[in-house]
Length: 305
Image (tube, rainbow, N blue to C red; front, side, top):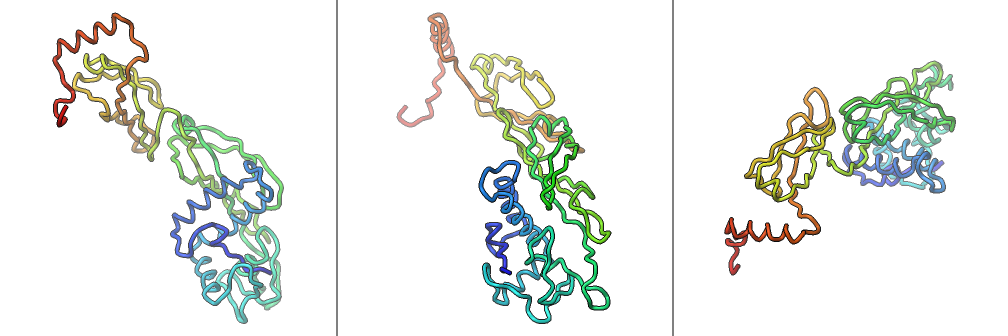
């Protein structure tokens, strides 16, 4: 049985923080998810990632695993628990080789328990927590949605689960569905299912937490004349008057027009000045007239201009 290098599997350093481990897991899980990846061996890689994350995200398991690494065990090396090895997750000896959802290596460390009489008894273990990556559009994040998920179980079987994506869900948020993970063994409870939300990039809006930002194209005559313009928001179009003093690049706030929640986010509008691609002869005359009337030099403060 090989000693598994969970840090190498997760592509993180030994001193990685919990956030770094989570970020790496999300990236790799998206890459190797069996429903998405076409790479050979993606399903095995996905299961291996789940096992590594199960250990490294749990401070207690990670501490015990790091203790073995400090004792000299390295990835790829043949492994047997040291004499007298005892984990807080169970008592193990050299003959206690596991089987099931996790690898023999994992279950040797964390998944096998003995009966009170010292003999191997029926294995009683809570079901494994499962994680599922869910891509969500910004529109669904705003209004909420119901999704039908095809979940691949640790034993290779699949099941369909209808889940509700709540209003205001944010990028990176986890939704816990209690008891929807892998079934337990020996009468133990099932694990939980964690939906890891990733917002799909939007063509108009940029998202930062609950706030959204929109770059708004505006014509010069709309700025100078204090015109009212229609502005798209996640909840529909709103009209806003642009003060005559509005400048290109100016950032304006629409309170409460971001993602919903107990405290809703805001929408920020960044003014982008645009000119038409073509101008008629009459339009050019009007521009020349405007220049003459205003006597405005936009470069007067530039040295040598």
